[in-house]
Length: 246
Image (cartoon, rainbow, N blue to C red; front, top):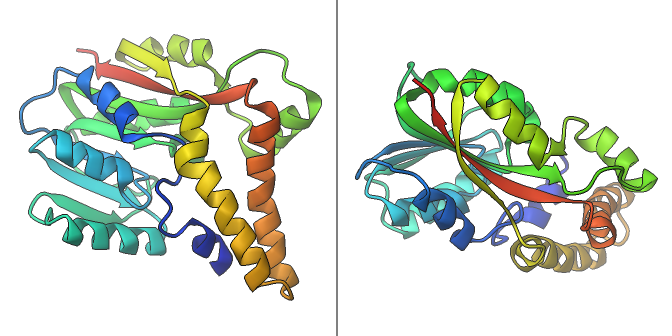
């Protein structure tokens, strides 16, 4: 990725839509042990990971493949004095080296698009202890038959995106029980992600006004914001809270 991508995303409140209140709402749906071992897959700069750390006294490992985001996360861990139980690792979700049944909870907010919902449920199940939990925050279609422009956009960006109902139907197929699910409100995307990102893009356009390559990257980021502004009726995101069957 172009360095300006990371500059645009550095120190934003979040790297996707959400609020700590939604992370807490999903966590409260679990009958989790007092000090669970948690793996946060695709943790980014660690905002949800640190929210989980405040909710439980357990050990948490956050993994992400992007070095600038992991570096920022490590700084946050130090600042919060949580190094004794929160760890940041540069690691791809495609190369996880943890033993089977290593975790009470696997958490993933805004990251399963890299491999798709079904593959995540199938491949991550081995890492969850019997009776353990999987929580995924995932992009979803909110209504059928979206307009052509947004349909074409996601055909390129995330063709595997499905409706809430389709994802719920897949959950038992891959060996999980459904505890619950809920959508995020539209403002959760604007307040902590798209709003701050759009402001940062405007600042960087001025900074790099003579650099066509960096401006092209910024235009791509702005396109995502604009698409949500025009078509938020048709798509958004939802939490899916599951328990490993058996």
